[in-house]
Length: 221
Picture (tube, rainbow, N blue to C red):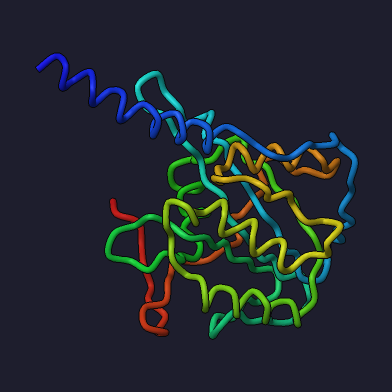
């Protein structure tokens, strides 16, 4: 029995070491505060936000955090993502989630958690102005890639979409094996315009799309 247990340890150990390597090793070199994104207060404001989980971690529970995207409409007129109208001075948040019985892509769940449960304290955001044609890029991406998986989680999903939309000079480094919010936060250090605890209170109700049909949701009490 002891020999069998010892053999199992040697079988499991390489997999455990590989998992640790993927979680912690980063192929990138970061130049601290070497870049600036110019973002005006008007127009369409596209943001990426990452929360490293530290403020919600306890001695008995490790919080890995969350990463999401948002659109803040300050254009003076309505804009649309799919059939959802974002009126002037309104915003939406969106990312993929590991939520059972739901599509991976959920809208405005982040704001609901922040306002209801005071979540994601210490979150960091980068923002850039985009045009309405870039909304079509976002829409096409979310139509094609609306699922969560361990390898293509919220951080992977968000940074890939961010890099498709923004100018190459504002892209976030992605050469890594496994994406986490904490790792993504490292790439934020290259920018001198990082916003702490960005306000998302103008986002609306939670919703998702099931088979192309918008479905309203709400937090469980």
